[in-house]
Structure formats: C-alpha cells, structure tokens
Image 1 (cartoon, one colour):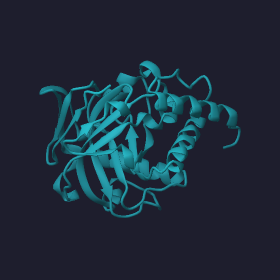
Image 2 (cartoon, rainbow, N blue to C red):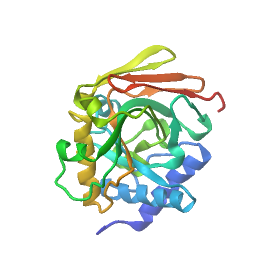
Image 3 (tube, rainbow, N blue to C red):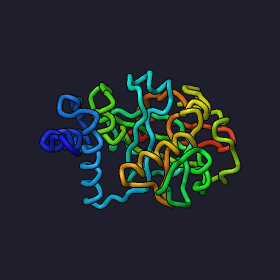
Image 4 (cartoon, rainbow, N blue to C red):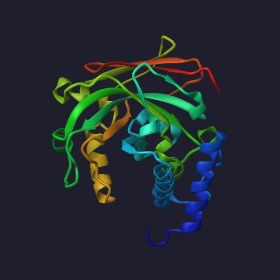
Length: 262
C-alpha cells in the first residue's frame, strides 16, 4: 500500500498480539496507524496465526447494526478472519482463558457452497452461493483496554473477533433473512433483540458487501467459508459462569456457556 508505514504497522501488530497472548488489554493502536493501514495490521497477525498452525474457515462482518455502531462509536462496517480454533459447537462450554473482555451477539451465519470471485454482487447473486443458513453466537473480544476503539483499532484487532458458535443447518430457502427476529438471553433473562433488517437491511446485503470488498482486496470468499453476517441487536457483556442462548425465527436456538475458570 502506497505510503504505508511498515514500522508502525509492525509495532501495532506486536502490541495487539502481546495483549492477546498475555490476556492483558493494551492501549489503542490509533496512535500508530490510520484507517488505511488497519487491515495490514490485521493481515500480519492473522498470517502469524496461520504460520503457527491455524486454518482460515471464513470471515466475520462487524458493525452492521446501527445499535452496535452506536454502542461502540464506530460508523462503518468492517470484517475479520475466522480461524478454526475460534469455532465451537452448539451447547459447548467456552474457555474464559481465551478471552479478555467478552461480549456476545446473535447473528445469521451463512455457509457457502460456491466461490464468490466475480461481481457485481447483490443479495440475489450471493444467495445463490449459500449452502446453509445457521443461527450463531459471536463472542466479540477486544484486545484494547476498555473497548476504547475507533474504526482503525477494531479493524487492526481482526474486527474484535473472539469465538463463535453455530446452530443447526437450515436450507437457504427456509427463511427470508431480512424478516427473521432474534432474542438473546443471558442466564434466562432477555438482554438483546432485533431483526434481520437491523443487519444492513438484510444479512444477505451484508454478505454482498463482504463479497464485493473481499474480491476487491484480492482475497475472495470461497466455497466452504463460514460468514458471520453481523449482529441483529445490541452486544451484551458476559462473564465466567454465564449461560447464553439466542433464538432466531426459522433458524432455532443456539446456546453456549462460559467456563468458570479465569
């Protein structure tokens, strides 16, 4: 990238990786990088994870909901990379030892059965590449102290990716994704709700945005990828011992618990 400060990118990447490895949140990285350099930081740390044996299994779209943008003070969508060791099964106990400042959100997840390499992309074209639709929980987790983030901070931090849990598989024709409704409960108490329309108007619109962006960056979406399309409602802080479940109409319920170990 023309004009990119490699030393600043490297320093920001080390700051975030150290926070992840030590579980001690770090200062924001916006003092080091701008928005244009943030994805370079993300790519550097993802490449390091892959070199250590992790495998890319998909992408996550962030900041698709107006409510979440308002919560975090960020005004545009972003994306991060999903790795195999982030994935958990419905009902699993999630390790708090992997997390720093976790928050949970409920989303529609897509599993692709075709590549999305050549646009233009819209809801109709990306829908043809969807093999399954699943309810999902995403546990977002900032490595930056106090979630004090701007767009550059969260992008550099792999879009605040933490862990994710997928529910049962459903054929893509089983639901109209923009019309689904969601309720997310923690310890039996409803804490967040929303609809498919709260995710960029339709989770398929979010998928089309990502397909366009990824293809433009030369790293297009591929068959087999899991895509978390973004929150349907506000994110909710969680702590050790919490039990979380989200119900999305037409897609059922997905559940997870948070282990008691710190």
